[in-house]
Image (cartoon, rainbow, N blue to C red; front, top):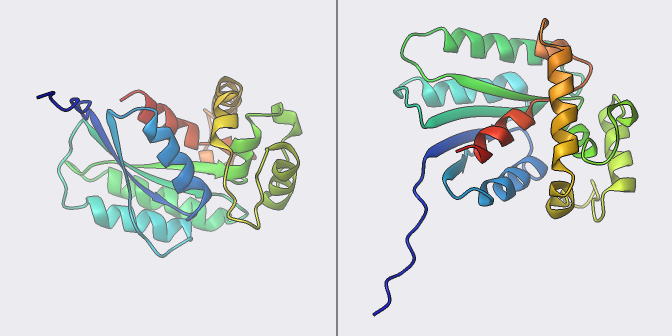
Amino acid sequence: MRCPPSRPLITKTVYVICEGVNSEPRYLDAISKLNPRCMLQIQPHKHTDPLKIVEGMVSFVKDKRIEKSVEYWCVFDHDDKAERVRLAYQKAKESNSVANRPKVQIALNTPCIEAWALSHYVPPSDIPTTRHQCQKKLEEIMPGYDHSDGAKFNFEDMMKRYELAQDTARSWGLSNADGKEYEASKLAGIHKLVDSIMSA
């Protein structure tokens, strides 16, 4: 009798709360399938407010112990919610200062997750600074993307251009290295989460 194929050893578990219910979860799920050593756990939630999202994750981690192989992330857009985003970062900082509590990490996208998607196709200077402009431009560029019909990213097409997007995200991060992420005019914090999933 032939033995069933062995499953890859899980080396990392990543818990995520996403602002969106379509683009972000579907995209992250597709990314996680590229690396079966990472177990992705999208946590259910009912909030789109950045502060409420972080509060939800803080509540989730407060009684857990620190494990090197487990991470906790919040994914949300800036989308002109400057004060709520600032408070979300403050809440995460407060939680992360508690001894022996797992850290809550934030993947902020400014102005929106669509800016990250666009960075796979165009140079940084061609990426708009508002959510609606990003969505409109993405509909023009990404095959099959329609924000009014599920806002589903073309994952296969994006991955052909991942290095370009990665370079853009890192350049945005470096340009804001001396300041606060939530004050950046453009940011693709989700690339840090993607890198973490892929490096498990």
